[in-house]
Amino acid sequence: MTTDIGKIIKSNSHIDYVCQVYGPGETAHVPKPEQYALGTWVQMPAGSSQGSVAVGLVYDTQLYNPDYGTFGPRLSSQAQLEVFSPDYLNETALLLGVLVVGQMTDGRRVASGYCPVAAQIGAEVSRMEPESVRAFHENGSQLDLGYYSLLLSIPDPIMPPLLLGVLDGLEDLMPEQERTISALRTSLSWRTRVELAR
Image (cartoon, rainbow, N blue to C red):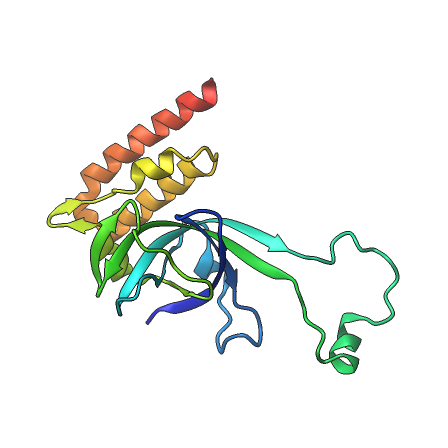
């Protein structure tokens, strides 16, 4: 059973989406922070075909508070607003950055490294089950990391540790690919150390 995390509210590019996490009153089960942690695999409907989803990876978290910086006196406390102004909207939000790295249809990988069709505003984002994450990375008996070079090319200091975390998770899911994953981890760790030494 998938865990619904939130909904797409905008995109920064064809592969970079912003998901607003569901808060109290928006869903029956408010997601826990561990369910949308950095490196979490997620999916969202993409395209017009039933069962077609864009596969993404949580790479960023932002806390949005429009009241920050307004330190003037308040006539009502937060508790009083709920009683005297029930239509008052709490505009704070927790936003996730999601990088789309592939596509699946009916549980089978269609593309790795990109998703040709875009997700839509309001598309529901849900956490992927381990079996789906494994299926996304399987190409026969081979490990398919078509998105690996794409993520490494993004000039963001979080990418190397994010990829190391992804490799750790895949090693648990796909123990038969331990040699390949270990070689990738060693190469990535060396590359990260070299770049930090510059």
